[in-house]
Length: 94
Ligand SMILES: N[C@@H](CCC(=O)N[C@@H](CS)C(=O)NCC(=O)O)C(=O)O
Image (tube, rainbow, N blue to C red; front, side, top):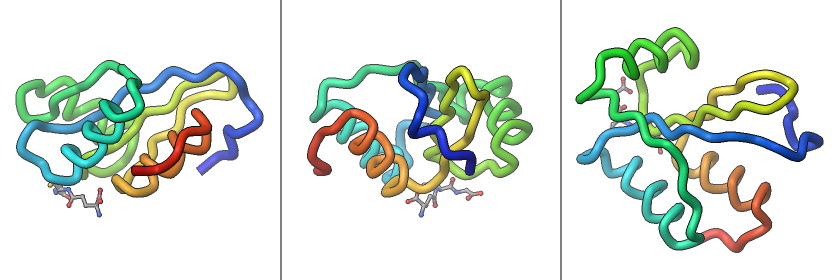
C-alpha cells in the first residue's frame, strides 16, 4: 500500500455488511471513537460489491477505502483498519 501518512486530509468509506463479525469489530471501533463515515453494504448493493472488487481486487470485507490528494488506497483486515485509523486520528486502540 502507498504511504499516505504524510497527507493531512483523507476521506474514508467502509465496505462491509451487517452480519460480518470482522466488520462489526470495525464498526464498534468507529462508534467508540465517534468517527462517522459512509458505509457500503456489499450484500445489499451490487454496485458497492463491484467497486470493492474492481478497486480493492478482493471481495473480502471489511475494507476501508482511503482517498486523499495522492489517490485512493484500499485497506483490508479489520485489525489493520483499526490500527491505521487509530494512528491517523491519534486515538487509543480498542
Ligand atoms: N482477517 C480478516 C477476515 C475477513 C473475513 O473473513 N471476512 C469475511 C466476511 S466475515 C469475508 O469477506 N469472506 C469472503 C471472502 O474473503 O471472499 C479480517 O480481520 O478482516
